[in-house]
Amino acid sequence: MGDSETSTDERLLTRWRLRLQRLRLRFSDPALEAAFQAERYRHNLANIRFAFVAGVALWVVWGLLVRPYMFVLADLRLDAVMRFGVFIPMLVVGFVLTFTGLFDRIWEWVSVAIATATLLLWVFYVSNVLTLPLEYGYVGIILITAFTYTLLRLRFVLVALITLVGIAAYLTYAFGAPSIFDVSKTLAVLYLVSFGFLGMVATYRMERFTRDLFLRERQLDEERSRSDVLLLNTFPEAIVEQLKSGSMGRIAQRFDEVSVVFVDAVGSTEQAARSSPEAFADALDDLFRRFDRLVEQHGLEKVKTIGDAYVAVAGAPIPVADHTQASVAMALDVLAESEETRWPSGDPIVVRVGVATGPAVAGVIGDLRFAYDLWGDTVNLANRLEGQAPPGRVLVSESTATALIDRFEFGPPETLDLKGKGPTTVRVLLGERSDGPVGARPLEVERRIRGSSR
Picture (cartoon, rainbow, N blue to C red):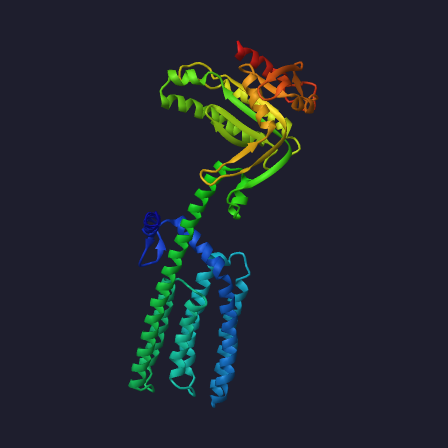
């Protein structure tokens, strides 16, 4: 099992990697590349600011260290102008730009411009300072280029470009200066080329690793999203959060009052015998999908389906004050929605509904294929009411009717001998009251009920 999962992950990662242009180190998918750049900037912003601040500090420190060795007044003046009038101000400008709203779009080009300008101006500087040794020049080139990938963390292509510009500029100066001995020129070439090559290799491998890590994180995000969707299709969101926090099983809650809705498709057994399995399943799937939408619309939680029965609850796993009204309103819409559906035979699908209000216990138990479930006398009563409801009708408990007497119209109280309950007072739900607080519609539902029952 583990080997199979590992090979599947590797295949997925290989598929992702096909989107990566290996030489340029860019993703072929523009959206993927944009997402990578956005995440890279977000993680890199602190490093960029630190690079500019550290650069300013180093220019100041190095200036103090080398100044005692400059014996020519012209060198001292040039050093002060270049160091405090050019190099440090460029870094300060870059640092200030990091706090602007457009920096996320231009940060690489700002960094490239500062690094390239610093390299070229550095070559001009060392070519005009006469009292410092040759090593001072190419060591500066090495330090500047190192900044581009150790702190600024620019992309490989940009680091390679900056490195080549710096090497070319310095060697052009060095080979054109008659005062520099051949052995010094050779050492400069050796150091610059070696360090530049190693720096570009390190940058390439670092960026390649970063992009692979980004792909793996995207892959994990996709897998996590799929898992979350599956969990949310199995459990209420509040239960999913508990499971994700480590409560794997034995989640239990007691509710003082909830409203349970049982819906059953009348005559489904006969329809299944007269239809192909695929056609029957399609019809039931269409019906239950409609109920799923009603559950979301009215704020209920779908508990489960049992054969051709659909079970939902209002007031669990999160208690709500209007659970009774929500469950009854859904029951009315269930009757109306079922009229829009047909069995494969062409017969209309007729449902009956039971609604009961009272205390209940809910939770998750078991180890295999565990699911969120509901228990208690209220659940049993809703089930019995659904079984006794006439086709195309909603039968509610007396407690449900009492809570909504000013909002909905109910038939007169009836006493039914329910299995496991004995004589029980129930009522038929007729529709919303036209003069009640809801008042959203007249008793159209009652007319639809009468029409469907005929």
